Length: 520
Ligand code: BGC
Image 1 (cartoon, protein in one colour):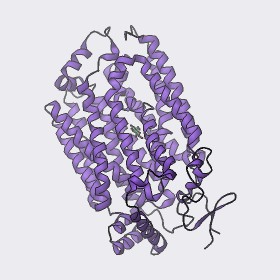
Image 2: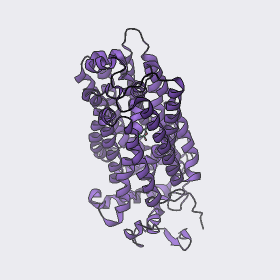
Image 3: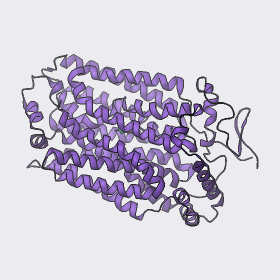
Image 4: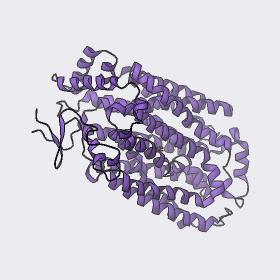
């Protein structure tokens, strides 16, 4: 009887290796995450550069230059400035819906290529911007690019990766997001120092580099065998699979890909399918996990760390430096999650990370509240105070980076059964983009009105989401995807939606003590 533990292929062990071919292919494809991350990291820094504000947002600049005894909470509150940051996510939301059709009908590669080209165009327009409308137009093009890339790249990676490495590669995508953010933070730090005040052009135009990499990558990368089968190129798909796995005997995996494709063709309307009662747990997670991920408040730090640090009394240079520090913590803590996710489990990371974030949010609220009060007048800020605030923000970022960051993408992708996978994943991406947009759009205004209470607002959500995970998310560590249905059937709450006969896959039957593989 074949072993089951940790195998994600219906109990089968497909032969094949992590070939150099597939490794290079996946590294190139993961550059899609770099594009996304670069963008998250670049806008906050640019919006603290004086020359940039003077040119495009003079009223914000004048407010910023005003006496520091005026209300610090509101000095960056400008609808136009927020539109600059958040327009991208609205565009990405629209594009990810369109991209799902392109990806399905024409393959993953054309979507990536399209994404790279749009992103490149956006970077050029932004780097050369002479007026606010050029900035917004550029941001929208970048957003379209990201929508296409984020829709196709994770799919591409999962389909290319040998199943044993799929989990690690999934968090690899998040790792490249965090590296993108860090690179952007570092570049902002140096470009802000350029005499003549045109450094922001390099920051914004610099997005061309990851864009060119993904564009060229998409031209040279092979399409996935899954996608080729889906588009009727079975013969080429078998050859491609041999090349990817580095062996001749790929028949078993190939036949399963064909069967999976046949199965999913039977589903006429995956969207309507999703509304069936047995998919209630999946639908709930597809909506709530990305919603909660954004309501950790992480993007307040990612987009606005420099603005935030300036608000609490740092000089411009020190603010950019602090965001480089949080960027490093973000990357390092993601590595912790790659190491621990299959050892300690998803629930442990979610709950530990949630507790850590909650404590930090309360401490930061108290620290800012004590010094700034409700009128936003800090007086003299001692150095130790600044160090404590940055320290707790770093511990908060670490908590996110090994929990809700990677798991917000990993868990949804591993719980959806094949017949609803693409539709449910689209919902996951769209909900993420909507709330990324919303937080980016209202944050500066919230800071102005909620003042230091802003952090308590997010702390409340972190508490709610941790309770939710505790009661409603079953552990998915080490469970083959085809057996995932079992976690709902044995769950105290979800068992009322999922019946024993649901999610039965050929080749499997459930043993008394958990999953067992039917002998063949
Ligand atoms: C989130 C982004 C966030 C990033 C931070 C991602 O998982 O989706 O919104 O900015 O993590 O590292």
